Length: 249
Length: 87
Image (cartoon, rainbow over all chains, first blue to last red; front, side):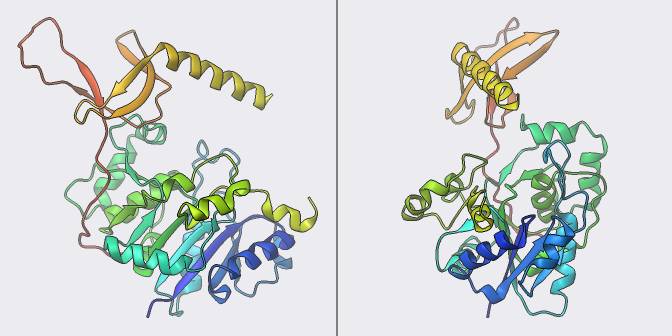
């Protein structure tokens, strides 16, 4: 029997988090939600959710995420430690502005993972080595970048570099824990590091091509939640300001 | 200031894309978007292309010593099997 943990990463105050959890309770089992708070410690202390952890990680708190190579490695490590001794079989990882839209959100993820026979599914999964992808080119300027994957890979081709959108992904517990147990050798942007590490550890990483149009960098999708749900979206990104209204902003 | 910078950047890209070429996948014939290409000091600068592409020299049926064509292609979607997985 699959048991999914819904990890939601946020930096927002408690009132916003409460509104977010209320939304999540309509789309997933709220008892299976773990809040990871990367904002201020005072805000974390005020969050009413019982299942919560505080992420005190400078690599998470970046301003220019791509150029500062934002990292979720510390968050994965903290969540993996929280999971120790608990019986969750899968991890759904979402940022605060990645909203589920369907009541059977986790069931849909589980069904797709099984259909793809995958260990990780995510949005905009693509192979980027040797390409003009800006994140790849920036990391390729570091001579250690490809050497690192050569050292750790279990695959025949160490050259493969994957990219996956960071706002929402779904993992088997085994893949999540395996990735969480590795130390980042130097700063690597999370959208490259997480899928590439999973791939080179031997896990199967697959794209969600039918969902990618609903998960984009911009614009804010709040005005079209019903429309994208009717168009087949399980979840949508970004919806950045919705929870701010809970504290009167 | 950031908004103005962003607006000027987007406008510049729009103009350069309009002046540029449609990039066709050298292997599949798929439209990969538009970009402005120019050469400078032995390098090819690709401006405004959103798709991550790989450069490839195109096969030629006729042997020519004076001209070769450089095109672009993309990786197929990742579909790698599971392989000795573990921590």
